[in-house]
Image (tube, rainbow, N blue to C red; front, side, top):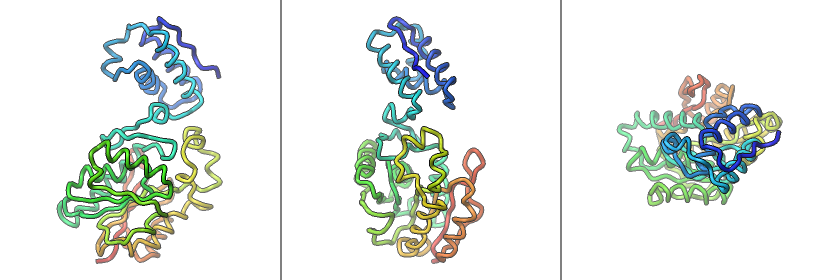
Length: 295
C-alpha cells in the first residue's frame, strides 16, 4: 500500500487525520496514537503543542518528513524505533536496533520485583540486584529508580545492547549505581544478589514467523528465540539461580503466554520455592513469576 504524500500547506490536524486513516487501512493497532506521535516528531511538537497548533500549516521540509515517517510506519516499523525512544516506568529510554522495544506488559515484572522486596523489609534493604539480558536497561533502571540504596548489574550477550543500556543509565543519572557485563545471563557474575530479574527470550523458534511484523521483522531475533519449546533461557537461569541469589533472595522472570506452569516446573526442579500464582498483566495474562532461594 502506497504511503500518503503530505503536501506542503497541509495543516497539522489534517496530516494527523491522513496518517491515521492510512495506518488503520494497513492494520496498525493504534493508528491515531501513532499518527499523533509521528507528526509531533516531524514538527518537534509534544502532545499539548500539537493541540494548540492544529491549524498550523506544514512547511515543505515538514511535509516531506511526515511523509517519510508515515512510509516507515506503513512498512510496520514500530513507532519507538522510528522516533528512537520509548517510555517505560516513567523513564524515557533510547531504543536502538540491538534491543527490544520495552513493552507495557513488562512493567508487571517491575511491580512483581518490588513486591518481592517487601518480605526483606523496606525497599531500601535491597543492596544488590541483577538484570540478566538487560537490553535497553528498562528493568534494571526502573528498579534502581525505586530502590534508592541498591546497586544493579546488567548482563547481555550483545555488546551493542550493553552500549544502549549505558546510554540510558547516563540519561537518567543512574550510571554511578549500575554496571554492565557482556556475558551469557549470569555466567560472569559472582553471586550474592538480593534480587535477580530477567525478561528472557521465550518465543519457540518455530513461532517467530507467526509474530506481528513489528516484532518479527524489527526486534533482534536473539532477544526473541527461546529454543524449540521456548524454555531454553529459563533452564539456563534456573540452573544458575542458587549460585547467583543470596539466601532468601528473589528471582523474578517474565513469562510468555501459557508458560506459567512449565516455568514453575523448571524453577521448582532447580530447588527454588515458587510463588503461585504468577502476577497478571493488564490483559489478565500471567506475566511475572517470582521464586525464592531458600534462606
